[in-house]
Length: 97
Image (cartoon, rainbow, N blue to C red):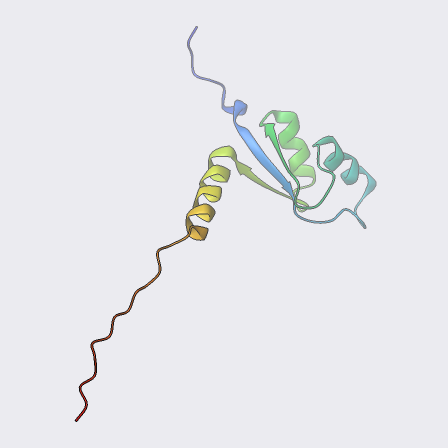
């Protein structure tokens, strides 16, 4: 039984990008049920139909990526912030006339 994994078994990376004050009580409960408590907190969840429905309900409060997209973004950020060798500029001596 080595079949392909179902499409809904993908891992999602969910991040709370907006604050909860001023939102509906049901949306606060949904965000809490996703495991998010603070802004910019990130959680990993399987892409089940129930999780996708919860994300759809609070889609203006969260950002969602697949795990592959998240890892690629982290790698790109690390490469951009990597220490690079310094630029060495050598000038030829000026001849005085």
